[in-house]
Length: 427
Image 1 (cartoon, helix red, strand yellow):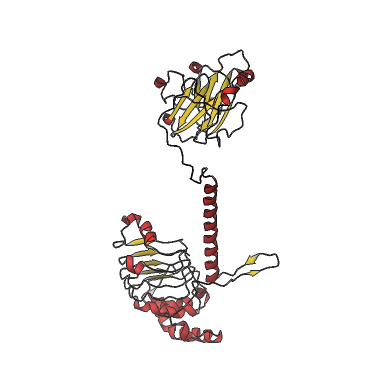
Image 2: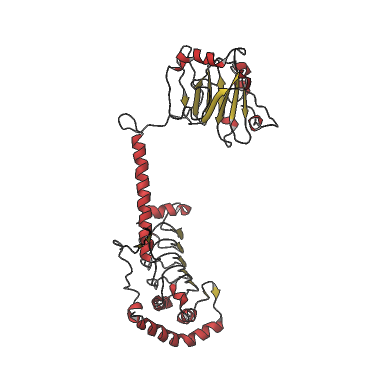
């Protein structure tokens, strides 16, 4: 059950800088609220109040809102119209799709004290199916200008006033025939709808094993509580997953800090495979076997100026959004001939790195690089998450502009052909 708390009110009052004492409008729709509370104390100057699409069974605790002009309680569980007599400024009341039945029509007399009430909507309530519904409502509330979105004409108001005594007698007779006490139905102040703590099951299990519930206020409360229980269970499962992925001593694994520049690799230091951004990539032999192609899925909305790249003979580095992708190459390449292209369609970055020995074979070179690759792997999870014939690992550095790339020439080529040739401005 969701309750109206001060924290919720402050959150929904962002348009008023979270200040409640001067708040004039608030929207609390679709919050799973089961009871109206706290508004009397915290928001005394409300003029517009939206409470539609909740599971509120009773109108209550609004009597101090002297400035309230518009109240929307559509799609709730209300059966009686009550406790609005002291809302002296009320002009519009929306009770669409509630559960005001034929007996609930008698509770409309409580709105006679709202002298400024001009618009009322009861569409979708069971009471609208009664043949004398509209005339009875107009006769009971002669100041109405609009009922269910239709204008009340003066001639209709006069005719309704003439029919009201007969309609009321007919309504009471029908209620008595159905076993409903009209006097009790008209007692709006002490009306009690649903036990807020325990709601009995309303559904019946059919022969197919499926639970079927009738459409009633109790069903809406049960379904809302079940949805909240499922949301809590899902949140607990997420927390359990985070706990399982915690460190050796139960501490949560912290995200690595965002990098501003590419790290330097000291000569002789092992090159570790890193994929801090969990980018999807493919490192494989290019066409003809004379180059290595690194294809990284960076996304089409990442600005090219936010990408840094560096190609070295034994490794390649890429920095995007502060996250490092560092791969050891399976063969030695020529950094000065490396070319980078960016797809205009997908945003993928393709780095083509010609092999240092164009006549050599990639596989023997990869085998020769084996001992260096066994030095270790960092950020193994997601380090290579797309299939490819090459293997990853490495470190390096480069700036986004060509002037800052003394170790590698990265140029962008705009093409008219396929997707990988379709490119953006140079890195």
